[in-house]
Each structure stands twice: as C-alpha cells, then as structure tokens.
Amino acid sequence: MSENNLIEEFLNYLRFERHFSPHTAKCYAADLSQFCEFLADSRGGSRPQTQTAQPGYDAAGGGTAVATSVKSVAAPVQMGHDERAVLMAVEDEDVRRFLAFLREHEYSKSTTARKLATLRSFYKFCLKRSYVQNNPLSSIRTPKQDKRLPKFLEEEQVRRLLETPDVTTLLGARDRAMLETMYSTGVRVSELVDLNLSDVDFVGECLHIRGKGKKERVTPISPTALAWIRRYMDMRRSDPRSANFDQQAVFVNKHGQRLSTRSVRRKLDKYLAITGLDSSISPHTLRHSFATHMLNRGADLRSVQELLGHQSLSTTQIYTHVTTERMKQAYDESHPRA
Image (tube, rainbow, N blue to C red; front, side):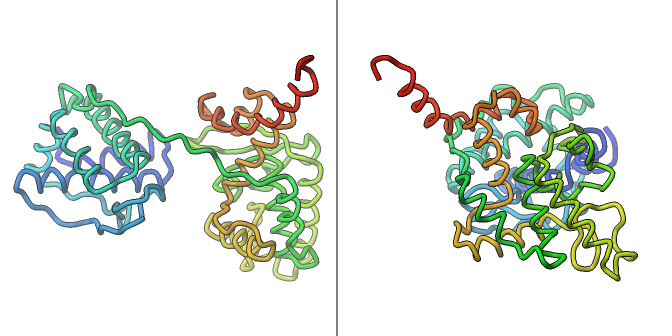
C-alpha cells in the first residue's frame, strides 16, 4: 500500500476522478475523521482531535443532533501506520458499533445514512485499489429514511418574492434577474453562480448548465427571465466601474466579482423579510417550487427530471405529492359519480 495518507488519497480521488464538489469532499473528510476517532476510542487508542462536537450542526448542513465539523478539507485526518492498519482491519461488527454510537448520540437518520454512504464509498475505493480484500459494509443495511416532503412556495408567494427587488438600482435589477432565473429554470444555487455570459442563449432561450459531477445539460429559460437578465446586463455595462467587473460571470457582487452561494442566500433572506414570507425558505425552495408548479400544471415526471438534472427518476418522485390537488380536481371534473 502507498506510504501516502490513505484518506487524502481517497479525497483526491473524489475531487479529481469523481469530480465531487469541495463541499462534498469536506463532508466526507468529516465523516471519516469521526469514524477514525471512534475506532481509536473504542480500541483504547488516541489520535489528534480534528473535530468539535456541536449540537444541532452537521458538516453537510443536515442532521438535528450532535455532529461534527471540520476546519478545512485541505487538512484531512493525519494517520500513522497503526491507524491505517486499523482502518484496513475494520469488520462489519465495527461498523455496527459505530451505528450504535450514532443512535446513542441521537444523530438523525439522514445524517447516519450519509455517514454510511461515506464509509461505503471509502471501502469500495480501498477494495478497488486492493488495499482490503473484503468490504466491511457489504452486509450493512442503511436505516430506512423518514419521508420528508419538500417545502415549496405557492405561485402567488413566488410572484410577491420576484417583485420585491428595487429594479431601479443595479443590484436590485441583478437580484430580480437572479430570482427570475432560479424560478424559471429550477437550477441549483451553485449552478446559478457558475453561469457565464456564454452560457446564456438569448436566441434559443436556453441556458448551458454545469451541474453536479461536472455533468452538463441545456435547460429552457422563460422570455421573462431572459428579459430581466438583459436589463441587468445593460445597466451593468453602463456602470462606470464595469471595466473592472468579471467579464465572464453573469451575476456579480457590488465589487464586480462573481457572486457566491452564500451571498445569494443573504439576498434571499433580505427579500423574505420584506415580504413577510417564511424565513426558513432557502434558494433550494425555489427549485422545489419550480418542480412543484411544473407538475401541478401538467408536466410529466420524466421531463421534470431532465430539467432538474436528476440522475435518478426516484429523486424527482418526491414532488409527486403535490399533484394530489390537481388529480382530485380532475377526478371531480371527470368521474361520473364524483
């Protein structure tokens, strides 16, 4: 086996071969760090502490109980030869004890499932590299998840939100264009901030999207959203500072640099407060609303799957609950005994 740090090798595999995002790699690093510490503690060993217990926080933003955080993905677990040997000697019983530890500390089912997915991916990698002969996760079942329905806005609520920014200002016009684009296309906020001007096809009325795992897709965008993008770009070009702005990015901050996902969330929070809408609404809620409204108005599930960039149809099926009202209406209008 390589003398290099095994977990760092795995994280590099995720980043450069599997094209995982830095955030996802950071979450995997947190999960593996916690597992290593669990193994060390349960076997009477010791190792540097890289985690901090925090109630109500999880490295991936999920979970509702005690979880862990990681300072930086660039500083993964530092393992000695003994610890590496311990990881390679893990058996299914060690994993079961780890699951018992997570239950004891009241981790949510979704967080537990993610940590198991991390371990599955890690040991598949080790098996592929011939670092282990057996996968200790092969007999472990993932706990059944609680079904959570996605939160979404009603069409009238979306309209109020979209009309909130002061479009007489450059930043207000940007925010209107940004909100219109998210609702029109259902793009993830990470995909939104990655948009370049070359990705916007004003003639074909579509966007070129670079999604998860470097997967690319082309999605339609409404003429209304395009009109707001065009208005924002016209105002941006007339700004005296425009020569110093990022000339590739569609959405930039007040300093002319590409907008971040965190900035998008802050802007949304601002408009939620103004409109009096639920403060827990996130940029992803607009994605949920896009899918919900498409299905409610008759779009088929497969088309919505393609528009959202979901790899599996089962992922899109979480939105089918919202079609109940439409189906009841169709039943009342069509069934002779209704």
